[in-house]
Every structure is written in structure tokens, then in C-alpha cells.
Length: 368
Picture (tube, rainbow, N blue to C red):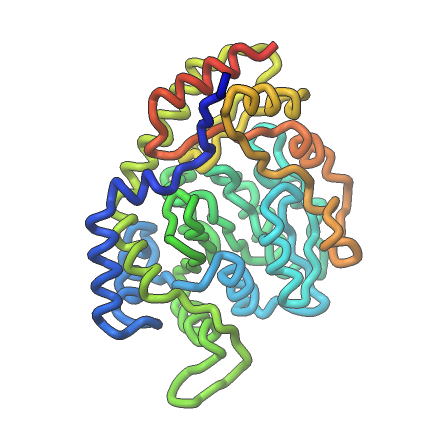
């Protein structure tokens, strides 16, 4: 018998829900004849800054570019160290390598999967120039504890908020807490473009001005280049699309939270740990991540029933060849290694059909 496939994420459903507005925004840009760093980028930057409650947002070509630019404006470079969690997307640490600095991998909290403040404290050294906590899976890291330790060491905090559009920590939006914050607008994010795109948010006007120069080769005027920069600009098409999608971000996050609540009520299997919303946090469930010691067996069980799942992430960063000889660890990140072997992401997105939600719950509950 043919098994019906349930996709992990259907980005087309989000497009169909906003097709008229999206197509109108694309047509507006195409007919304008202005495609790079013009009105759409400026308007999106203002609108997203207002959403975050910060004075400045600088659009970039990707979140990786945003992270690299954030490190550059803090003058992080060769001979410096930057503390990052051992469980996150590799791009977080690759941005550190790109500026010539050394990532230092700190272990995670086994409940929230975000950077453990005690592990951060052990990872700090006289060479540390920044800390990058990641708001993983849609939940903020413990920014108060992380901020205290970073402040004691005299180093700035850069939020990696790539998975946390609309998340909150003690009432404050993700992206409004650190010295700088970096966002991804990859198509599957809670706020996603239809291509690569990113942004840096900050309250510091001087940093914002330098970010704007560095994202376009370091240019400050007509053929005036004061320092080397990147080609890391957000384009007009993606900015116009993001302006449309920003209007529905909160609605989408409410639906993600409702789906997560339904999963939480419905899944009843011993040995499968469900995600936890930390006190004072508003989780926006970029991913709904369950955990079990028999992850691969559960994944195969769900695949046999047509349910697509993903693993975010199958290895801790220090286990990747890309960082061998380029990173440092103070203590083995055992919690990150354990989590990488046990986490499994179930389908979740705003337009997830109720029938698929029920099918996933039934399939998980049939696991033994």
C-alpha cells in the first residue's frame, strides 16, 4: 500500500496565503527599475526596527554575512576568541573563522539546548572579544545570566536570533537585548524571504553607520572607501517580500505556538522528551524538537508512515572537520554531543494542516 507523504515544511502554503500581496510587491520593485539598496530596503529596515523596538536595523545578504559584519564592527579579528554554543548551525562559528578569530565552543543547557551560562564562564579568557548566544529552535538563551558573565569579562554580546523572530525574553524581543543581533530570513524561517537575506539590529548609531558602510565594500560616499568591506547587501526584491510577510509574523507565531501546544497535549510516549518553554520566555517554535535515546529508530518509524522529519543538528560543532585546528574547547561539551545524538524535529509551520498534525501525533504515539 502506498504511504501518503507528509512534508516537513511546505513553503508554498505560506506563499499561497499571501500571494496577492507578494506578487504586488515584486511587481512594484521590477517596475521601479531600482533593485539594490533603495526604498524597499530602507522601509523594511525601519519597519523591522519598529517591530523589534530598536533604533537601527541594517539589511544584509544573509545571516552569515550579518554575523561577520557584526564581528567586524566590533573589531574582532586575528588573535581573538569568540564564545559560541557547541550545538548550533555551523554558520555561527564560520562567521568567527571568516574574520580570522577562533571560536571557543561552550556546552549547552540540556533542557533548552541554548548556551549554558556556567560553560560560558569557563570558556572566557583574556583573548575573548565577543560572546554569541544562539536563540535555538525559537527560544531565547538565558540572556540575563549570559549578559552578567559577559559584562564581568568586559566583552559584548551578539545575539544570534536567526531562529527567533518574535521570541521574547522577560518581555523583551529577541534581537533587542545584546549589543548587536543577527537575523536570518532564509525561506523556512518564521520570517522568511524567497532567497538568502539577513539583518543586523542594534541600538548603537555609530555601529549601525559602520555596518552600512561595511556591507557595501566599506563605501562612505562617491568612490570613498575608508576600510575594506564586503558585498553583503539586502536586495530590493527580498526586502519588499519581507515587508509583506512581516505583517503576518505575529499571526504565524501564534499558530506555531498553537501547533506546539497540540503536540504537547497529544504526544504520550514514555522516553520521548518534549520541548520546554523556559520561565520568562516566549518560545516561537521555529522547530518543535523532541528527544529520545532511540532517535534514529523513531525517525525510521515515522518515515515508514510517510512523515518527514529533520535533525537539527546531528553533530556538535567541535566534531566537524571544518573546525579542527581552528577552534578551542575548554571542556568537552558532553551535553551538546548527547543532544546531537537524540534530537528530532517534527513538522511545524503556520499552515500545517490539522490532518498532518493528527497523523504525526498518532504515528509518534504508535512508537514502541
